[in-house]
Image 1: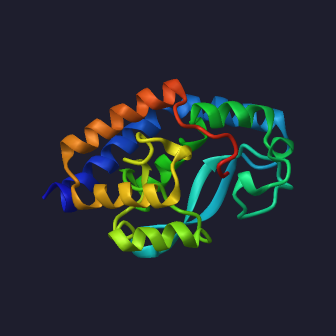
Image 2: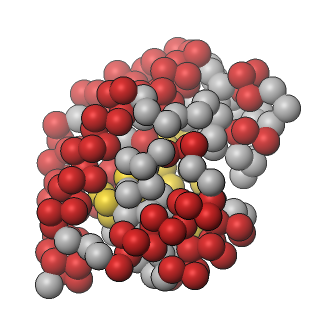
Length: 196
């Protein structure tokens, strides 16, 4: 019941409330981005959704507009050249992820679930297939994020995502949600330049 009906309802309600409460924060961040570098406020990118359906994810732009498209930042020759000053802060604080609230309201994502893979992250997508982790909505945060975030190897991430997929409960989602807040505050497991 929770997995198939209540979870989606909670996602929508909480995300709608968050959009209202964080509206001023969105405006302030948007102004800071516009003042720091030329280009749009939002960054969009193709990601893998439920049943491997591609959708466009929304983030606050943290990089210059001349950054190579669809390339993980850690594969760039000089990531620091492309990341803007405000972008560094947004990434470290995970505030760049806030626009994904829009994805949750649209039904592309859930609050809790596997982080959506890049459309060309074949290794991660293939690993998740082994555990059925591509068959549920991706999330704003998930079990892998409270277990190491960027530091985890792909095989371990996929296994954790599969573990979550097998056991989706309200209490587990609450635990992941509050542990995520704690991890973000401490910036645990963040490796700069993991991906835009």
